[in-house]
Length: 502
Image 1 (cartoon, rainbow, N blue to C red):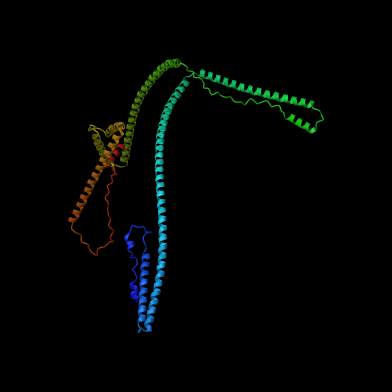
Image 2: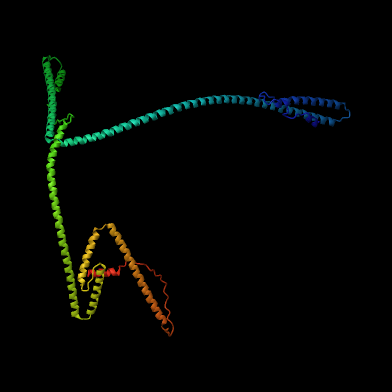
């Protein structure tokens, strides 16, 4: 029975009207609940008819027992109850569908209103955009006009500044010319104009003083006349008036005081602002002054030329006198040096005599030293380009060397400093190279001597030592560094220097 009733129940959402017209509006399309309720009512009527036929059929059955009848009633009750429940559900669904349709209608209305408002907003926005574009174009045009105006004003400012600079230059030139003309203006004219200006200032001051005195006399006469009038009015009034009024009248009369005479001494002088007229009103005046100055300058030029000629003669005499005095001074210095050398020689001889008097042991050594000294001086004498003679004394050669040295020093002083510095560097470099070569040769000689000694030791017979060998404590290894010292003095130069000093 249950299967029979369930077979009549329709499946939801199978109404062909919902699928037939998809373009129909949502509020115009039929809902699934309408079709479902119609089919459900038909199925219910069919079910009731079938149940009634079944009941009538059952009644015809005589052999049907009570249990089957109760079961069938029970099934009918259940079917009826399910039908009522489904009807209630259908009703609730229909109410919900109705509410949904109303909500959809409201939503559609709201969407339409929103669309209208959005269209209005778009129109207003377009309108504002057009207005903004127009305003921007207007502002851009105004800005361009302002820029053009600013450029024009800048050009005008530059023109004005250029005119000002030109006028300032002209003003400076005019001020210089004015200062020049003021310097050429005679002092008498300047003093005369100053006196006239002071006289005008004194006249203006006297006018001010006279004006002040007239005003003071006028005020004084007014006050005196008013006082006399009040006194006469007081005499003419009757005595029946109150004493208070009399006192007031007298007080008012006492308030009128004659003004004192003004002090006119500290009044300063005032200037009218007018400049002193220039002395030069005609160009011929300036030409006359230039002519007079030129005539006076010619005399001064002649005097200055004579003075310069005299000065040049004095300078020439001074130079000649100085040269002669320098030559004499040089000769005296040479004589002094010769005398000092002779004194040194005599002192050396005296020392030799003292040594000889004390003993003849150092005579041969002294002679060898003098011989060696003479040979060294002779070698230097030849190197300097002198012709050496066999009978030339050491003192004579030293005198020639000293004179040559002084000539060379004076020549060096006249040479350019760069050339002298460069030559000194080259000579210093040569000296260092010579010192290095001498040191290398000395080291080579020392090495050869050591090798010679080692060969001699190796050729000797070995010495036999007796007893136990003494073991000394070992010393740490030392690393010797060979550092070339360029600061060492050339021995040859030192010897030459020593001989020259001697």
